[in-house]
Image (tube, rainbow, N blue to C red; front, side):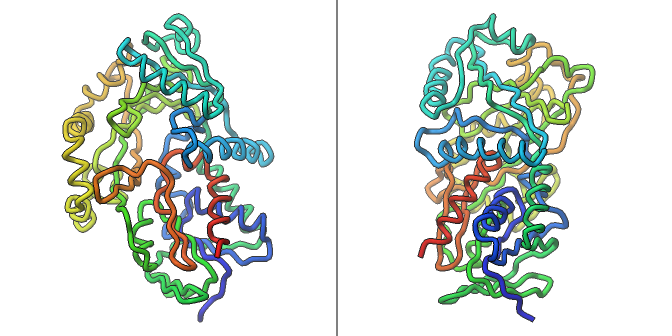
Length: 399
């Protein structure tokens, strides 16, 4: 039996759920169905990130990241206040640990100011007021950065979607997407079949594969990077008050290992960034041979690896050696010792890579008839989700 829906959304992470919620808010009579392949919502990137509410300080002014982070952050905080979702604007420091890092730090500060972020450059003495155990010659204090549990946020979104008549179907992996002139046929592995007016692909780690199923010519490929974390033991939690970040390496697209206080009181340390051997390769030994071969043979990854091989080796070494991980962390907090750290769950980042080897750094969408693909939704996607949902709804309504 074929079920009809105005809009089918593939993916029950934060972007998919925020989109469904927004669409039900603006068009309550439309039938919205969310298909999620896992048994729970927010099972992958959404549920395995560090739970930071980003301020927008790092992003190029005028970029989709900058615009949507700033607007999305305000929308997220407003939603949380109204719906009773716990969050905290605890602030963060971005620490220059040497004089050589100050020019890059100043550029980040300038970006933040241009993006409308509340931030201030502080000296080493002021840094001690915010983070007594941090070491640095200067820092940027960002008081509006915050923390949240995005799984809790998604649970409230899901409840709102269902109360307004939307459907969230779990354990439904999409097998086929067949677009035609005025509708899209969607079939799941379990045999469910939908005739949808429009389809929105919010499949995260599998967004490129879902796009291909819908007939879109993929301009990029998702390469999975595992981010490994440690957590501070109870006796070491006093070393970190809130969020301590390094000045990121301008030649490397990741932010570097840092300290993050979680909303539940834990302190996460990390992540590094290493190639995952499966798109959902949270463990070192989790291998999907087909997915690994696909990554290794992709021309874009080969070019990327040849450019960053030296930095990549350092990331791999930190993955293999706890002492190397501790050494990287101790640059920010010198008192950190190996016994202060215990293993924490890893996350996997869906990094879109173009065929020329460049990392796709901003949000990216493609349209194939009545199918809209969210091809790249990098950090700060969770922070920005409620505004990204508006962008998606505008794009899917365009003829």
